[in-house]
Each structure stands twice: as structure tokens, then as C-alpha cells.
Length: 121
Ligand SMILES: [Zn+2]
Image (cartoon, rainbow, N blue to C red):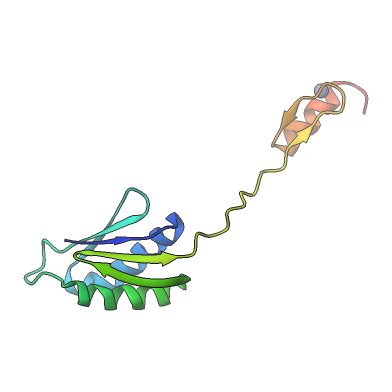
């Protein structure tokens, strides 16, 4: 079975979704493993998928799902995609701090109910 390795988890999910569409005609199922690995399950096909064939599907799926990648290569049965790591910045949820006691919450409604409970506003 052919394996596809990526770097980015989001890209992996998107690629698997796109591959599922592309490969449905030949009855190959992409299965996500370890968050950044896709296994092309060709056990239900009459003729197993070659790496070269898989590579073509992977290329067109990458394009369809608009995944940025630097290069793509394969070693034996594994296709490696050097995709971009994606934005490392984790968008932190806004936190509201009570100026009176330091209580914090990510929920604005809860915050205002809390602040009002001090009886100041
Ligand atoms: Zn408070």
C-alpha cells in the first residue's frame, strides 16, 4: 500500500478529502494516520495502484485543494510532500480580565455578568 507523508495536519486532511474524490472511480480509499500520513488503501481494487499513478493523483489533488508545497518525491512506496508548515502563530482567544479581582474568562457575556456582580457598574 502506498503511503503519503506531509508536514501539515490541515493539508493532510484537505489532501485526503480531495484524494477521496479523485480515487473513488478506481475504488481506492485514502485513510489518514498519525495526523500527517495518508494511506491509500487499494485492497478492494482489482489492480493495485503504482506509486507513479498515485503521484499523478496526488499532484492534481494538491492543485485542486490549493495546497502549497515545495517539492514532492517518493521512496519505495512512500510519497513525501514538502508542504509549507502553515502559520505557526496560534491565534489566542481574547481573554477578558476583571479589573477588580483579576477574574478571567474567554466569554464576553460571562465577563460582563461577572463585572456587574461587583456592583460597581
Ligand atoms: Zn471580579
